[in-house]
Length: 623
Image 1 (cartoon, helix red, strand yellow):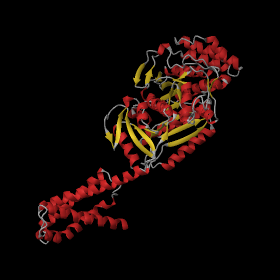
Image 2 (tube, helix red, strand yellow; image 1 turned 120 degrees about the vertical axis):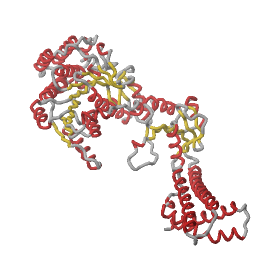
Image 3 (cartoon, one colour; image 1 turned 90 degrees about the vertical axis):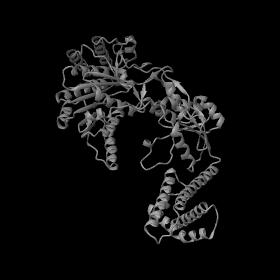
Image 4 (cartoon, one colour; image 1 turned 90 degrees about the horizontal axis):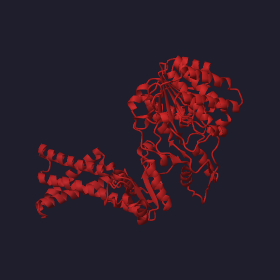
């Protein structure tokens, strides 16, 4: 009640003073007996009426120190309503003090102005206190455009942050020669380094929505000038109900992030909503993200299938926790531990659940490890896919989307060869099946299990060195969420037998990726952590490719998806013979199976008019 009492007293003083000023203005500042009489007769009832309106409207609850334009507008509306009410009561009741309407109008304007002034003063005093308190705070640059820069600046100025904004950099020169919240705006075309030196900045903040290229360029300049670069998350990244400014360090995902995908959400929803969806390899990096994103499209049931008991257990725990925390009901979830090479088990599962769509993400993908274990790679990647394709055809699955890899293009390793053969078998069945079989091919995804990013991160945590195979090694990268978004989009727009190839952007040198990760960890190369070159491992290539020569005329069917030209000869009968040959040698020695695998691969590329890799002998030797 103390706060309410103080507020009532303040409003009473403002309203009484406003009436007195209105009377003085109306009578040319002549304080006559008539003026004093009008004031004495009307001040009490007018102040009481206005305070009553304030109490009912709860205007007193709007804190002065945190006022915004909305609070000022609300208070002005209260004053206007009070003026109209007083005028109406004068007309309705003769017992009301009769005040000239001009005085009521002036009183209304003066009251609104006085309350607005009080709010602005309280807000200004608070900002001034924060600025004095933060006089020794870190000198900060805001790297953003338009309203984003204004929002970030005012948020810092009105908080007790240990930051002090000394400049705003407009990267696209949208607001040149301007001042926002007392902070000068600099044209980004002047060069960020020059602006940093001019402002003596110690910290730089930028919105997380910027592309990976821009984040990479800005963070590199900051590193060279000893400035700490941070990203400010968008509203979508801030947990619900928390609206304070939060910063996070720049991550490797930020450096490689591209423009957001423009998805046909309605098209994706059409083939997923209220359907039974199966995801193989559901506990893997891609499979698990497919399961998560499927929730956005309302499937009736999701079947999560994987041979890893621990992986399926983790997915079960994650989805159970999600189910507890969400108000909306999740679809029915089936967690199945099973091997995709077991034909009887797969037939039983398909018969029981009748999936309409299958996302096939189960595969052994670690290149050097599969070189030493060709039996496992052939059994899982080829014969596991064969089982799933056959069973999907048998049970008339509507769509079957297989996730492939750029290593299937002119393969130089066991893993790539097995994925190429799996692709070709799927296409051979697509030539006569009612099921829509689609292959989606893309390169590396960041932070996937066993990939280069977790390896580099572990090596950096251990103090180095970071091992890179070759200074010229290039790889295509995209984030896991982006890859999965495009997989879902491919499932919506793909035709049966399609090979859809994702636009991976520009390739990245692995050594540059290593240097970026060292820098983001707070270390310096080579002073703190060195890089050691180990040479190519068995089966590795310096440059990965996404297209065969026959696919160079691929048509862009989406801003980030290409459709490869169709092959005239699918070789359905030949594929069965070639798989039978592989099956007979599956339990042979590693070298013998590897020779048969390359033999089958050569027959496939020759039949498909796809040029095999030129260095066939060295490929086998490396294997």
